[in-house]
Image 1 (tube, one colour):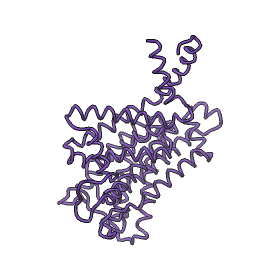
Image 2 (cartoon, helix red, strand yellow):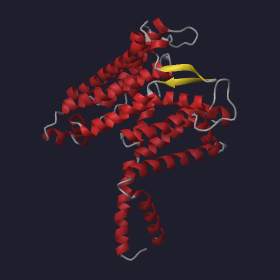
Image 3 (cartoon, helix red, strand yellow):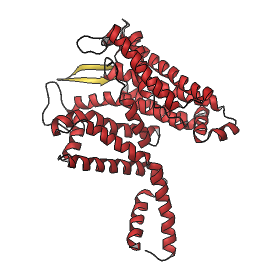
Length: 382
């Protein structure tokens, strides 16, 4: 029995014990365990997990479907997937920046909604030409999100109001206030959503003819990837990033080191909010062209799973957001092809969040196993 335990520990340490690669191996193990747990649930529902996961990839444009409608193929599905991926990447970076400063920005959905609504009113319903409107959409969205983030950071610093509480309250305030204005002044009587934004202000080129296809081309995807690289540079190579991470590791220690903790907290939430604002405009003036009243975008909450899965690493977020977007984007096709409820995708995302949250514990247990292996080796157990 002792030898069996020893061999199991040895196998786990061999897979996860290299501290240099734990930032990759532990998230990968979390993904594997969550997909395995999801497969068990799908089996209990009487469906084939491999077919269901294949349908997710088909819905996101990573695998071909058996048939396509006119002007569509696998490439059009993939560009539509990138359209959904863009706000997810921005939202995940927003969560990660807050967490690096020791702040949990659970209000990304509210920041997305508010920035999307205000930008829609200011730019989306204007007659500005595309060359002016599209950059202004990004600027206004980032500014609105930054102001909301700064408010959350200021409340935390000035009155010690927990950022989770203030973020949630702002989420609900934004949800119901914006819903009132949409239903009162901007509702489309047919779609029951806000009036569609102008074509010139939209950050996605919808139904663009390319050969014999019609594609949705997201203009913000390159900016989102470049932003991830920029966030990585800011966190690792600037004084601001150093101070932000110092505050995240320990506020008292940062204060003794001469860091202005209050300013860093406010600036961190402002930076996080600006990224949340960019997620909002690429969502409401890109992926969608209107706003559904009384609904917070689930992207802001899924972004928490993405950030945790990547360990708040900006480059890792590029890859983890790819996975979560595949699950959310492919769920509709999975529902139609496999007969599984699309909510199963949310269950899988929740499982990824659960296993990712255990990453620190897994790291601790694996490192503890390494010590135990050394002790057992000394006692002659092999």
